[in-house]
Amino acid sequence: MKKKIILGIAGSSGSIYAKVLFDRLVELRDQWVKVGVVMSSNAIINWELELGAFNPADYPFDIYSKMDFNAPFASGSARYETMIICPCSMGTLGRIASGISTDLMTRAADVILKERRKLILVPRETPLSLIHLRNMVSITEAGGIIAPASPSFYSQVDGLENIARTVVDRVLDLAGFDLKTYRWSEGSPSGPNSSG
Image 1: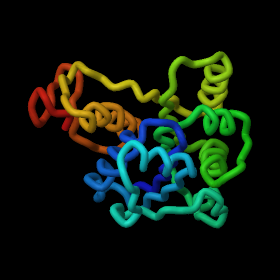
Image 2: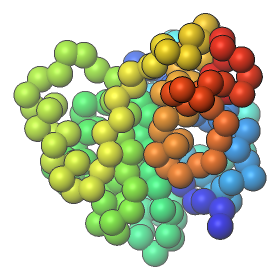
Image 3: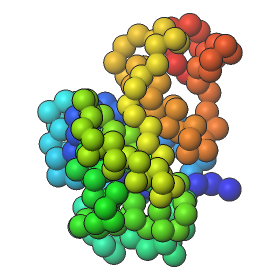
Image 4: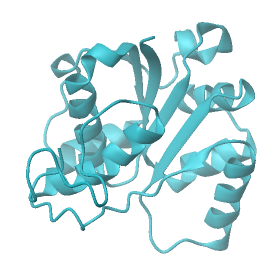
């Protein structure tokens, strides 16, 4: 059964992770039926600072305004089964942990948690304060998954996008996608210097 997923792009640095996630989902087009995207204002600013202009038409996704509470995934009845927020800022993480739904991204995360579906947050922050850590514990206790943007290096990848892809592929594994990627002690299907 094809997936319906939500992508949230919050306002922390690390737009390369969002781009690689978008590109990877395009490659996995046969495994999903709907991808709904919501980006914070700062996410768009960071994308443009770090990667250049963001053009929604480059991707076959449904992109919603951050305040569009008429988006289907603002309700559990739409049955989106997974939400990934990548990268996830500490502000967004804190609002989700507190149950504060001030925009579509936090509302969608709240819906996913209340419906007992899969929420995966990919924070990119260091160091972490005690407040950050407690918020992560709250989300984990509520059923969410914290998957920090910590690249792996044992696959000996090179290039910024391939390094980011080590994180993205792990996140897509957690989301239940079937993908070819480097796996520990199994090697890469595309050679020692490639992640997939």
